[in-house]
Length: 289
Image (cartoon, rainbow, N blue to C red; front, side, top):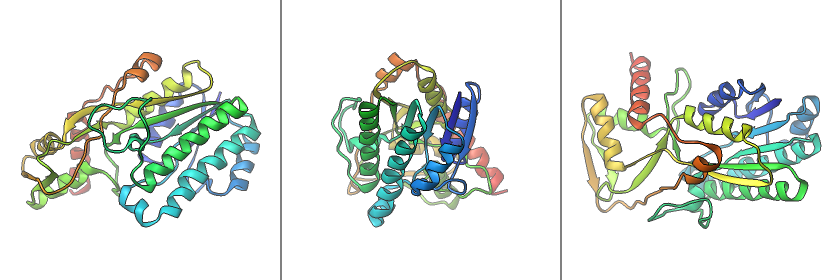
């Protein structure tokens, strides 16, 4: 079986390539190898080496950046996904696995599950929701199996010299080292769920090796803590720093149920948050001497 992984050089992509290598041959591409916004380039690539399974990780992320450049986000995340789906259809791909985001549900006060309504709040989450719809359309319209995965916050060590981007553990460690307080919204009560890239990769391998048909969506749930607990754990690992709350700062929770993934894929995250923070802190110290 031949797997094609887009975004293969990223934090999650590298772990996915490693996990899938136990199931078959893996071919990874990234922006320097194949531009997902160029349909002709994607089509030629798939014609040259038709994959059995496509795992689509390539994309751009971020709430604020997507508000600043919505056309770019929809061009890469949504049209890029459509290009890959059409090239997959033409190449006879059997299974298309798409990386979405739990942010498609928007702010919540209770656990969301796969049947909860979508309520994207910015172009990034909107582009992911649109991508999910297209995967479903291709699965239903052309008989290709589709899987949408909705992870929450993915954090892990970013080895130098790669640039640190969109990693809140690094950001909070920086504040601790600078002697500045970590400020969290509200009274620190807003909740998030955190997952290591290795656990995400395990979920991909399970989705790829579990029989199925049509289009299925799975939420990937990590360890849930309040933002104050999250910040306090980082302070504990660093050995210095402080946490303050700002009742005037708006915020919201993003929390989920992982029961469907557990029931149908046998997936549960195994790496706890303290281990994730410890890995990032160790890498931070190497990076900063």
